[in-house]
Every structure is written in C-alpha cells, then in structure tokens.
Image 1 (spheres, helix red, strand yellow):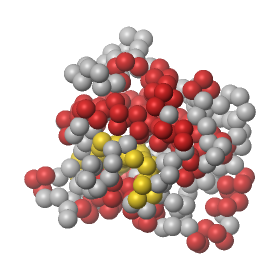
Image 2 (cartoon, one colour; image 1 turned 120 degrees about the vertical axis):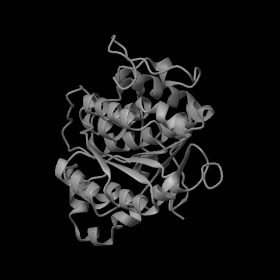
Image 3 (cartoon, helix red, strand yellow; image 1 turned 30 degrees about the vertical axis):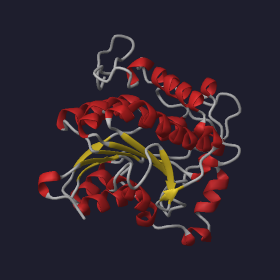
Image 4 (spheres, one colour; image 1 turned 120 degrees about the horizontal axis):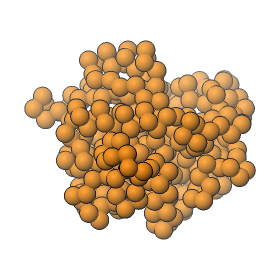
Amino acid sequence: MGSTADERRVVVVTGASDGIGAAAARMLARRGDEVVVVGRSPGKTRAVAAEMRAQWHVADFAHLDQVRDLARELRVRHSRVDVLLNNAGLIAGAQRTLTADGHELTFQVNYLAAFLLTMLVKEPLAAARGRVITTSSRAGAARDARVVPGDLDMADGYDGLRAYKASKLANVMFTRELARQWGPLGISAAAAHPGIVRSHWGRSGPPAVRLVVNSPFRLAMRSPERGADTLVWLAASVPGRDWDNGGYFAGRKPAAASPAADDADLARELWDRSAQMCGLEPSAAGSQRPGTGLTVAGGKGTGAG
C-alpha cells in the first residue's frame, strides 16, 4: 500500500540519476512517497526527477563540500526526513586516486560521504523517527575484506578491488554502529546487497571488473529494478517488525556479513575516525546527548557546515 497525500514520507535517494538509485526512486514515488532525487549528473538527475515531478539536487560525493551543501539544502527544505537511502557508489581503477579532500576515491564516495551526509541530517531523521538504508555489497563479506582505521585511505598496498571491499564492509559496520548510537533517537538503519546489476557501475573500475561487466555475463545480471527491490522493501516496510535494526540483507532476508561487522570496538573506532576525517567532533556524532547538534571542527560552525 502506498502513502496517502496527508502522510507522504520524505525519501532522499542518493546516486539516483541512473541504475539502482533511479529504479528505487521511481518505485518509491509510485508508492506515493515524496522522493528527493540526488545525483552527480545534472542532466540525468533532472530527467529522473522530472518523471515524478520530484525535487532534485546535484552533488558529487568526491567533493565533501558538495555533501555539506546538499545537507544544508535538505535541512532548510525538510524539517523531517523519513528515509535516507545512501546509494551513491563506484569502484575506482587500478591506480590509487585521491579526492580534492585528500581521501581515497572509492572509500570517500562509497562510505565517507554517506557517513557525513547522515551525520548532517541527524535532526530531520530524528524528527521523523526515520531510517537510514545503505547500499552495500556481498564484496564486503569477502574473506579478505578489511577495514583498517589507521589506513582508511589505503596508502599502504592499494588495490581497486580491495578498496571496494573495504568500503562496502565499512557500510555494514556503519549501519550496525548507527543502530547502536542512534537507536535511542528512534532512528533505524539497515544495509543491503542488491546483487550484480546491469548498470554503469564498474565501467571505470579495475581491469578484472571491466572485463566482467563488459562480457556476455552482463546479460545474466539483474535489472536495476530487481537490484533495487530489497532497498525499497527496507524503505517501505516496518523496522522492528519486518527487519531488525542494524541488519544486513539480501533478497529481503538477513544475509551473512563479515565477522568484522560484529566487532563493536572496531565499528566505534571507524565511526570516530570517520567523524575526524569529516571535520566533526566524534562525540558530537553520537547519541549520548540527544539534544546536542553536530559540531564542526575548526570553528566552521554547526549543523550542515
């Protein structure tokens, strides 16, 4: 059942100019949700939003200032955010690339930017007792997936697939820590594996990834709509009844995550280190003082930066 006009939820979908994100945005709009489309390409983002007469924003997650600007605009326009769907993502190539912020590209786009955006829309999420849904991947559950808080930017031994696996494991660790930290505020969190989807993902990745996505195997990959199904289910169903807060899902069912995802100490270390990398005081990102807003380090102000 969709929402009525009087109870339309505000649903923010990042990475929504194409692929899984665009499919999820369309599916949620058909439910009756007020979808906010966020993408990197102005033309594609505008076109997807026009289909559903939706609000849209352009933000390149390789630039954290654009994430801060996005959060500021969302906070101005929406006193509540019912669902934040962190879907933007990529896999970088064989050579280690740093963003303008000085972070490894895959780590920043797939994880750090989503962390920052979530932190900066904490108040509207809490006002709605909302939920944060994050697109992860089964790659994050691989035996060799590792998150090293002391080397999140992979200065030591960079590899494109290793960076991708680490970012997707970080997504799950963040989801579990978010449930622990912000659960008392009524905020729920979940992560999901969408499957291997026919999209533009991987076209600029390492040679092994490009070989797969450009091979005849592409015909057997999931459609974006099928890939978006579990994300939309998490966004539309009831936390605590239909799924457990902090869970990781595939095919609308709980999925096995990396054992590292259950390491609460490691997850908290990742959380605190991420806050520092984003210029946020680590204590300000937690739930110990629910009435306290986020504090930006370096005297840059509060809230969305």
